Every structure is written in C-alpha cells, then in structure tokens.
Length: 260
Image (cartoon, rainbow, N blue to C red; front, side, top):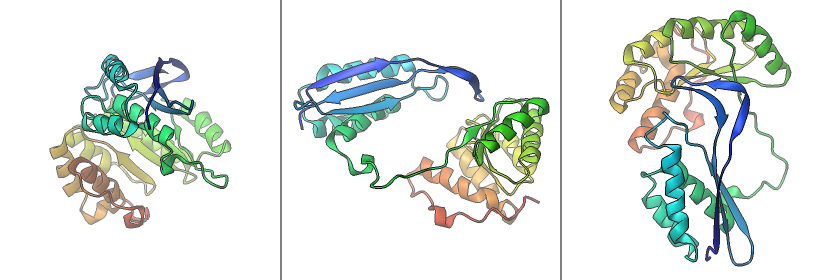
C-alpha cells in the first residue's frame, strides 16, 4: 500500500487536576498525532505522548523525528516505511511508535479491529490527594464511580510515600486494588524500605528502580517466600529489560500472602 499523504499535529490538553509523577508534575498532556492516508482516502491515526524526564526522548526531538519521516515517507510503500521505523525505534521510540500505529491502522492490522461485540475493560484511577482530609473524599467518590484499581505515584519522599500509601490502603479497606508507581525514582535501599513497610496483599510495585542491574538485584531479594505477592511484577520487570518472555497472568501468584 502506498502512503500518499502524511499529516502531523501537536495538541495540548490541560488537566483539570495536575498529575504528580516522581520527576515532575504534569499540568497538561501534549501528545503528537500522526495521520497517514492512501490514494483511496483511507486514513490511519497514531498517537504518542513524550513525557519530559521519563527518558532521553524529548517532545522537541520526537517532533523533529516525525517531520524527518514525513518529509521522506510520502509516496512510498507502507511496509517499507514501517520496517524503517522499527529499525530506528531506538532513536525516538514514542514518535516512531505513533507512526507505526498509524500505518497499522491504515493497513488493517487485526489487533486494531474492533471486537464483534461490545467489550468493556476496567480502567484504573489515579489518586491525587496528599492529606488524609483530601484522600478520603477522593477515594470514596472514585469507588462510587465504579473504579476498583487505584494508581498511586510515589518516589519523592519515602516516609511520606509510606504514610500516604497506608492512608489510602486504610481508606480503601479491601474494596479495591492498589498499583504503586515509582517511575524509577527509588534507590535500592528506598525500594527495600518501601517493600518492607508493605503490609498489603493487594498491592504491586511498578518500576521502582531505574537501573537494570538494580532491577535484577531487587528481583533476587523478592524471590524470598515472604515477598511472594511482589514476585510476579519483578519477574515482568526483568523480562522486559532482558528481552525474555514476560510471565503470563496465569503465572501470577494469588495476592493472599502478606509481607511479613
């Protein structure tokens, strides 16, 4: 399939409530959009959001990457363009991914076809409150709205993170699951302290460390029986950073063994 036209857009979506990460507070999402069209007018769309500080990729670099691709790709075969993008994915992965997604949509990738029947998937809700006075009403409102998984960002203040997480856990009182995201901000010692303070059987810690060797070392620590409920997520972390196969959900241990 020949790609006849490419259109690039940058948009800014201000957030009603700022989204706090370990490395910055997000006031607005600013994704880049890629539209590709063939000679028959069929279109495919792709989207990517580059979060400054999350990696070496920057919004400006991603935008420049997209312009460079757009300047040379129009008029060429979609398979050839996609192969080139996959080869250069390391240069600007989010931007390249947006282009690949647009091409996949245009060419009718089976994974992007809508299901034959209506499908509903549960989504998580971020927890933004910092104080017990703010956390209580926020969590109750989101529970009443139907949310049953909460994402808690940590990584700025270890003691404060532990206290806040416990407050959230107490407020949830077993009515939902918590997902803790440190955005690679913890040191090895901090990750161990946070795990040691964990007395919940409904919690997994996502991306606690920023270095592969530290991830591997932390993974070995989590192999101890008392950390069984955290082991599956660590297996996934190591697999994703070493090109191994990611453990399936069937291999995930039941969240029934509390941390001693």
